[in-house]
Image (cartoon, rainbow, N blue to C red):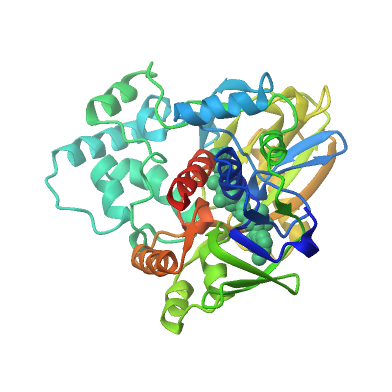
Length: 430
Ligand SMILES: Cc1cc2nc3c(=O)[nH]c(=O)nc-3n(C[C@H](O)[C@H](O)[C@H](O)COP(=O)(O)OP(=O)(O)OC[C@H]3O[C@@H](n4cnc5c(N)ncnc54)[C@H](O)[C@@H]3O)c2cc1C
């Protein structure tokens, strides 16, 4: 679309990640073409995009399709045709160098005997407890899993991931993300490897070629009214105008997928709403991607709860698709939520820990390595989050602005939810 001519639009979509693309896709599908999608990067996809380097494909850390809704699966199959594979999760928790299958709480059998007993006894006690509604995430964990599982996994891992004390967090994000086996299942999993797999991601989908971006590109190809390298600088809700690359665009309605906090900051929202937005906290994730000249025994991802290990998760990009790495090579991403001020020093510490954990060998040749920053990665579910988000969303909706996506709604969610939220917003708009 010739951007210099687009000064008026009915629906202005802010952001060209999956939420924005899905909104535009469903508007097109319903024959409503009076919209404009604007994206600041020179590519679509946001966090669901992929990067090509020296024959390797890297996503923005792992981006796997967890599809539970028949609508999304059918839609993605139509978009990707044969370019989609279904994989069975191979995910583990590193416990003193031993790989315990995920989720920890359903696989106590794999732990050293004393830890297994401690976790099992704690879970049995928790199951008998009649404690009241939990006040925070720590209390929720203790009630759901007991003291042992909390001490050995839930506390250290979540502390590392969220960079927040579990006592200062709520538990309304846990839903699909924290599998909650009942006490009979925990007992069975303490006695032997369970036959049942737990969690929302026991199977997942991934494009055979092109990384996660294959989905983004297939979707973007269906959407004509877009403007790339279009930075949204200001939103005036009263005048219904947006300043984009210094140019004014008039709109009737807005769909926001930008981080909620950022939208409010660049808008004419009232001061009390800006104060609410300032209460919203998030983590920043730094990702070190790298590749080695050897075929490493495949796993999908590993969790590291230990305080002295400088990452919380390591994923194997080449295990999602052979197309992600040239033959005879393996590629990985390492995620850390801690602030990194000295990247060469951090990289050295990470490689040392990867060798010590047996993920790579000292003899392996590192073919490439590069960092990515995900500035807004996880919205922190502290006690301020829900009231602030509710207040902001109510005000925005009164001002004809609807939000979608993990950051637009300031929530912990995944790609399928973004795709569905885009669809559902269109139902609201039309
Ligand atoms: C570490 C990590 C791992 C994840 N792994 C998975 C996974 O395995 N599976 C899964 O399903 N989900 C995963 N997710 C979640 C997934 O990334 C999100 O649910 C999804 O990408 C959200 O899409 P979105 O379009 O809402 O947001 P985004 O992808 O963030 O898109 C927003 C877009 O807005 C653009 N933008 C921002 N500011 C401006 C501006 N001022 N002007 C114009 N454009 C702007 C951005 O460039 C971006 O393209 C993961 C997330 C993280 C952080």
